[in-house]
Length: 141
Image (cartoon, rainbow, N blue to C red; front, side, top):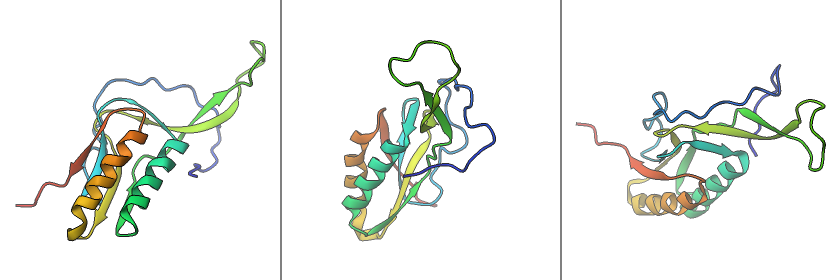
């Protein structure tokens, strides 16, 4: 499981999900194929791990996977049946906020395994809590 490094303030304020388009990580950097988000939302550590496992199990060690979505925001929760007040709850899980257009995973494999990579990425789309698409690197002219 992915856990971020310890930080000075463990409990950040809740971030607002704006419906703007991702400008920074919206292109493929490492692999030839990738998963790109079409809606905004957030990914938990368990969801990232589930997608990574499905991709690697479908590829059968014939490709390399890069995880571009890193969970860096802590979400807090109070235990059930606890009365209001008495401060903020403890850190429950870590999430990664996603904007539309962000590349979540990248995959690179040999040239013969292109259909295998596409099938693995299409199969892993159902593990995500929002809509995404499979993108490919445009050929260099």
